[in-house]
Length: 236
View 1 (cartoon, rainbow, N blue to C red):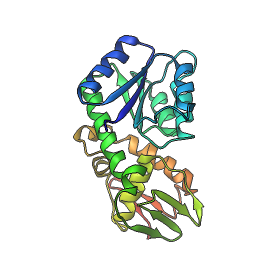
View 2: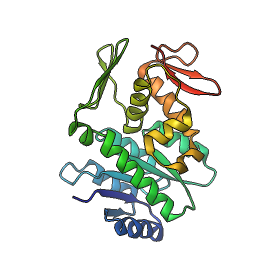
View 3: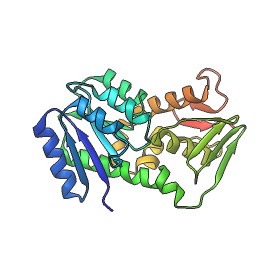
């Protein structure tokens, strides 16, 4: 069955162009041009669940941040935010709300398609649906327990609500068993696309949110340690 992508952008030309490129890749695309309509769609439990959403930040009715928040209240599928050029605050805010990636306008349609395909591959491999279909290990580190097949993480028996990207990053660090993993390698292992090397700085944002959910300290971490000039590692 073809994967379903929800595209929300009030600029119809952009929305329709993105849909055309994605449909040419065999994806099913649902287009919405209004934030309020998109919010109702996200909250409609009877509607088919998308495999990925592309959300413009600036929307009439409800902005992309509110949509991302509403998605994360119910679903773990990847979210890509579309932001205006130079709006670094938008990128950070989107990632803070659980977005998995961002694309700056204007953008090349083929680059967006590549990012969508990378996110779908990662979600299929590491996301809930993909992990339930394959056997896998349970990773343990001092009270931190990751059940890979069940796609669940607990810390001292407290469940952690992680986004697909956060889950993937934590799994890579746990599997490294205390070895340092560079931000570049984290991006490549998570998304499998060379172009992500240019934006590997957003790994810092994902790691920060992961620490916050774990109650980990940047200054004196119990789990995720920054090795300056090298990358990150799990303290064993």
